[in-house]
Length: 316
Ligand code: G3I
Image 1 (tube, rainbow, N blue to C red):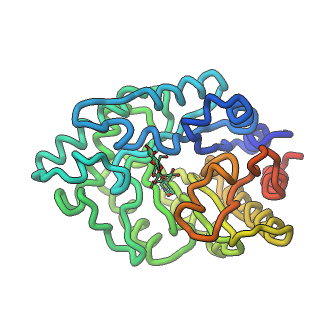
Image 2 (image 1 turned 30 degrees about the vertical axis):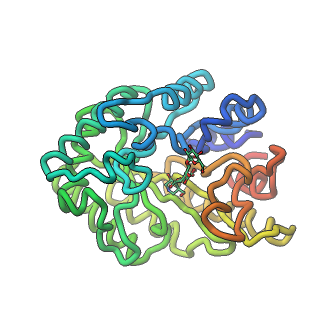
């Protein structure tokens, strides 16, 4: 294959990208997304603050736009995300709810959103970023109000809304074997034992240049060995700016290592990069002095990381 999507397909995997809704009307952006990728994730428009900005009022415009785009271009849609402590609308973030009320609100959100896109969205990040770095549960509103059971309940609600969707838990800094991935491993093992409908784990993979964890493949494999699918859901590899050719080469070998870790695990069904061009990335807004984490530069030109990822997928 001469594109990421073709090369990935030859390996039985998908190649995905997070799409910025406001860029979809730019034909150069849209054409490249369509040409190179077989899966799209909404960077923001399916998050709670976007899709249910006031209680009971759903805004489907951005989500529908992405789903329609994907259908026109023969792409899968990866749903992101249903239960997350960040990008909550004010009414939810600041509301004082009992456990029963929050359960009702959450079940309603999940059944509306998953139900609307039933059959159109193959995979969903049902719960995002539920863990602290030490492997304990993050004290999100759900954890504080409902307690440990909120995760199983969210998966049950999503399964009821679309029994054919593959349901994922997604997190960052879980690529290697460490306290956080151990905590997640113990959770999903327990959920499976209880018969909770969970089908996969998403590894966000927001990495720093030169720091692909050596245990990445082994870690993916231990989750796969539980019978789960694994996906690299949000990869980007940031460097201290300015970039130079040595850094771009290191980044290329890092993307190659990430791709190889996925390909070495048969249950790793795909890799999504978190944005199209460097200038589209969230990284410089959050990590002062860092940037250039993606596969294309701001002129839509392929970076060395693109070539190495394509080659790692067996393409040329
Ligand atoms: O919507 C407002 C807009 O009205 C306003 O004019 C503008 C001014 O700054 O801000 C807009 O909101 C921004 C939003 O993206 C939509 O563009 C927020 O400020 C900004 O913080 C938000 O950032 C997103 C971030 O999640 C929020 O946590 C990034 O685009 C998005 O890439 C990032 O994605 C997350 C994944 O969902 C989960 N994993 C980590 C990943 C990176 O943080």
